[in-house]
Image (cartoon, rainbow, N blue to C red):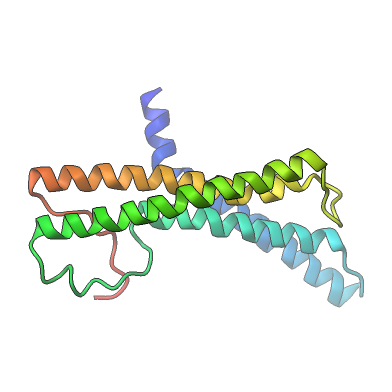
Length: 171
């Protein structure tokens, strides 16, 4: 059981991103061929691409938080000692956690209203709950990854070690 949880923790967002990106590219390519070659397009293809992109975006946010790959200005953190850097990251994660919890609450409310009234999408005629759920699923993953990040930063602060800063894009 432990290896499975470890694998999921390491790769869950990557696998989900791969699935949604593959769906997005495949359906978009098919729709371009249909439109250009056969002069025909479908409304469902546009919806699948749109909602795949929405899921891709929200899951990508959680993946970026996990890897600390989101955009940040880090000039100050290079000038302070390791313990202060840990404190800065902890404060930043706490602010992000507060925003994510509020957003999770309100996004869940939107899904609940859609569930209550049974709204459906225009092209696919599928329940909108499946598509609107992208936001609370994304924010739930964000909250989970922020808690993991906070625990990692608190451990670094207590041990006096270097805080995890993620991979650098440019050096």
